[in-house]
Amino acid sequence: MIRRDLRELSEAGECHRVYGGALRLQPNASHIRARMGEKVPLKNALARQAATLFKPRQVVFIDTGSTNIALAGSLPRDTPLTVVTSSPAVAVALSDADQIETIMIGGRLEGTTGGVTGSVAVQSLQHYRFDLCSLGVWAISAEGPSVWDHEEAAFKREVLSRSESVVIMAEASKIGSGGRFPVAPLETVQTLIVTDDAPTDELTRMTASGVTIIKVPVHD
Image (cartoon, rainbow, N blue to C red; front, side):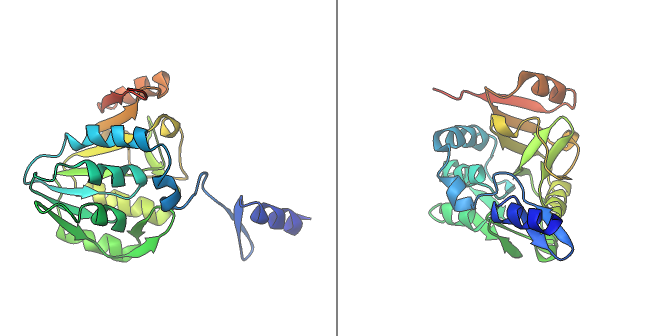
C-alpha cells in the first residue's frame, strides 16, 4: 500500500523516490529557464531598485535566481565593478559590460536554481571578500532566509560570511514562508526589497531585526 502511494506521488511530481522511501520536492521547482519568463515586469522593478545599491569599484557577489539575472541586466554598463557569481546566466547577462569584470566560480551545476553549488563552489569562495551580495532565496520570514537544499544553504552561508552587506529581492509569495533549510538569521540581511503587496504583518515582524525594507510598486 505504501509503495503504491509513493509511486503515485512520484508520478504526480510530488516526490522523488529513493531507496527506502521518498524525498518531497520543493514547491514550484521549475527549471530556471521557465522562471525567467515569469513575472518579468515585477522582477525587473525589483532589480532596478537593487541596482541602485551597487557602487563603483566594489567587489560584489550576485547569486542564482531569475530576479538576480534581471539584476545583472539592470546594472549600469558604465559603472566599474567586479562581479563574482555562481550563475552562468548572470555571467552571460554581464558579457556586454566592458566596465564590469565578471568572475564565474566553479562547482556542480543545479538546474532548478541555475547555479553551482557543492563543496567545490564553497572552496571557490575562499579567494574573495564582498562589499555587497545579492542573495537568492526560496523564502524569507522574520526567522531569516531559507532554501530547499542543504548544500545550497551551506553555500549561501559561506557567501554571507564573506559579505559586508547583503540585499535580498523578494516578491510577495516568498514573504513569510519557509524552505526546508534555514540559511541564516534575518539579522545578517541589511536590505530587503519587496513588492508592495507583501504581507504587512510579516514585514512588521521583520523590522525588529533591523533590516531596511524597501517596497516596490507592483503596478506603475
